[in-house]
Image 1 (cartoon, one colour):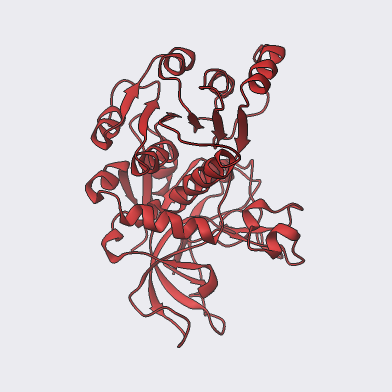
Image 2 (image 1 turned 30 degrees about the vertical axis):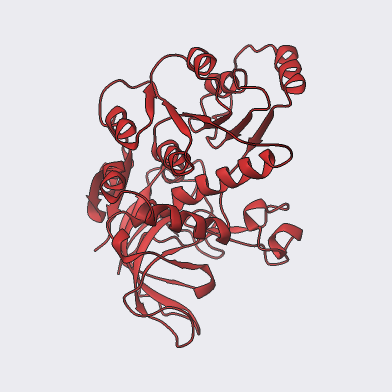
Length: 349
């Protein structure tokens, strides 16, 4: 089979190579890979700044945003040949911390988790892959062309769950949400906001390309002004930050309605310095009972929530999020970001 591999910590080593077909262990599914999504994490691994190969190996199969079709399945495992599935990314540590032991492995406290296509486990960027039934999620067959959006959807499903859990500390009836960033995470966060019946605003710096129209088609409002200006006017009850841009992160925390919740999903680059008035920020957060929370990764509960969200979405709208489909052999094109990209997908068949 063909697979996209990289030698972690060494830039310029990504290549499509022939590997032996995997043999499923007892109880595992054998899956034909259909597609993998490309995101910033993949680009970081390819550039040599991130990633770990499986023990005893120098190469890692890339790809954590999976989509495949079951080729063989054990009897009684809950799956059948032909099922459309995605594989869960993270696995709990072998001697689980309290969170991992309770199925909350997205909240691992000791860092000894592993991740498909990222940390010590081969990913899903291959024509065939295996997965344990307990870490496979079946999708509605109608999602065949857009199911690769499942993994990023789990990230925002968790973000919304965290927001609602925090809101439940007191009376909570949000009306308006501001999403900063109109990439895949931001747009899927906006989708889940619309599905909750909220007034949704999306802020991004680009004025052309597909993003403004995609937001409009969702029934949300698109903004390109500064964060402080937009948030000051909208007074959001919830902010979901999906850019990781330092200045945007700080401004997003400053202009919420009282008892506001800011959920950070974007990862900022280290080394960029900005001047902030920490005292004023602290005063506002305390006096308005605001909350700022970070959220990353997802567990099995979030995969189920994301599967329901995608199944309930307009399929034509989801299709518009995938702006490029690139054959596996031309992976370098997929790894090179373009101005009009939303989600780039590598096709494996």
